[in-house]
Length: 372
Image (cartoon, rainbow, N blue to C red):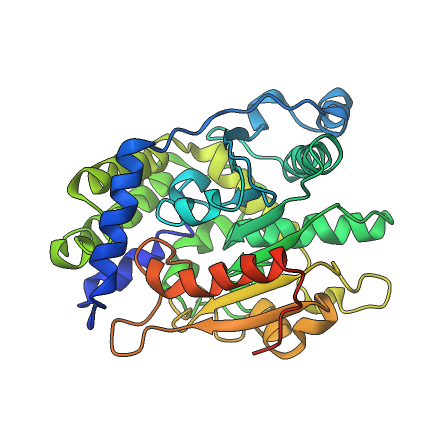
């Protein structure tokens, strides 16, 4: 099973380096708040279903390919919709960031199905949820996407642009975006340059064929061991979460790895293969993808996951304003400590948090982001 977002666990194989004295205090405040009001995402029953019902009614996708939609409701004016990478689920992807997001408004989690996947149906669910928040609640959301989830959002925006639609959004956040298969395996290259590319190459070589059981089990083993190895650094983890939180996180991630079956894994990869690169979208007919405020965050060490010639990294690093005129592309680093890894929102939470918090403040006060 492919697991695009567990690569951040590699970052814990090294010592974290310097730890700010404020971090344990921040963790104490957060965990105390969680004890008073523990994380409890509940199923959200959409009040608008026109787009997803149309996809299901056409036979283009089945109910088993529908994402699970969960929500933690709050009264703030800036709700957030979260799309994670392949694993962990969106609910675990923002495990530590959750508190900061909830201070701005409710958080909606789109967790991908275990036994199938349909980009068309996911986009329809996203269309319906965005319309519900904007039209029925007058609170256009921020969409926060990670790794493969960012690729889904790029394609969703591209299709909306082609259809002449502008989703009613408040903002966009992309963390370690992976927009196309070329980000993992450079065209014409027989041997991938990245660990993740080598792990996923069998899936990419036969995108229309369901993975066999041995291939899926090998992937599960590789990424489970990556996460287990990272979780051994108890001293570093103690500055981020309690032992109980780590146990719950570990159990949730391992359950996701175990439950995504061959069809679910293969259909996710099949979707990625169909997405055009951002470079291919560099056209007046398609740009900008969105004119709402946008923040793109790459980790300082993406090379274990994204090829160094990644089309997505090149396009956004050199011409972010063409795709998102009110956007900024930044690199998240950890001076003096272990380098920030791809999509490491858990293990490098304190490095990502200032960028994301500033973005929400600027969105709330209607200030435009300044390019870094």
